[in-house]
Image (tube, rainbow, N blue to C red; front, side, top):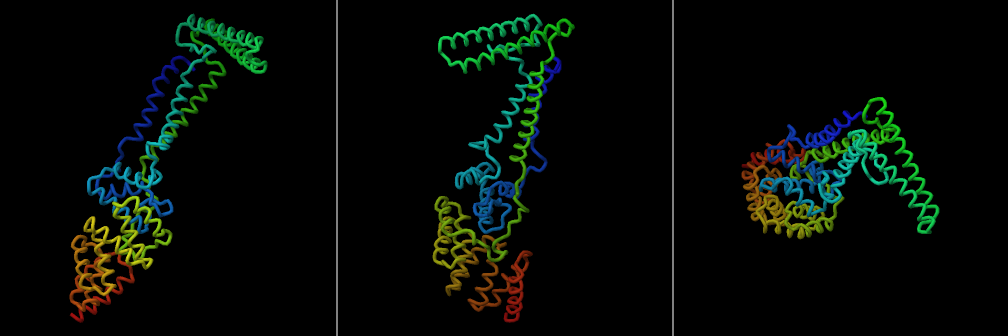
Length: 400
């Protein structure tokens, strides 16, 4: 490798390393801007705790739905993406994050590739070093290079003699001494080759010598390490900046999707999560609904009421209303369901429950017409619910 090429590489390689990082981190055209985009973006980077490794955005379970609602609430409250990630990491541990964080073991994804870049660059740029550790600056005048080589060769010879004296004095064993002497002799031979190479280059008028075989190998290896490091940095950038949706990212509304399968999650598991994160409304709602599905209605009500003590959450209101209706308290149930729909008009299950409470529980078919008509405007109502609502609407209109 000529001196001109080497000098060029000293400028180009560091710039290339910086360029790789800058390009990877440069804002892309698909930067999220709306709240809905931010919610999808964040949800795709957080693992759903009970969804077989899927992201919150990619899973369709009730737990994923509730956690996405929580993210929606955090975004609406002005939380930054990093604050949301930190919240989930503090609640569930760093493994909840699908993108490796720049902390703890997450640094390894960056540190190792960057170290490879550094090692590769150093190996390419590094000149031959002797036993004394003095660099041979082949960019310097030939006389200076020759003097450095001579000094290194003299130092190696002094080291070799010193090892011989230590063996003779019994300070080190013969085997270790033989190994050290052999290494110094090999180093001396390589330095001698350097001197001869320099002399030949001077005789030919070429100035600084071309690399010896060992240096050529080192520079080739360094170039390989540099390329691998650059590729690894690129991979790290892709991993930490690309979307990780874990699927199509379609999160079904639990209200319109019918019963949600929580068979893989036990109440005890969710109780543990809620105990560690008492302020996470979405997880408490998931636990309450799980208790309801497993027939433990009183425990479900306890958790729904705990939510309502913290905030007037429409989902908790609707569920309490439905449970009250099932226990024969239709009047009180109607109030809860009406309050839920005031806060969230686009809540189809609450519309369906209110229609049932009025038509069946209170004997008010006329009052059931509005919630039934509102329910049928939703496109994603399950077929069985839609069919039942259409039949009830016909009967309500006929009886009104």
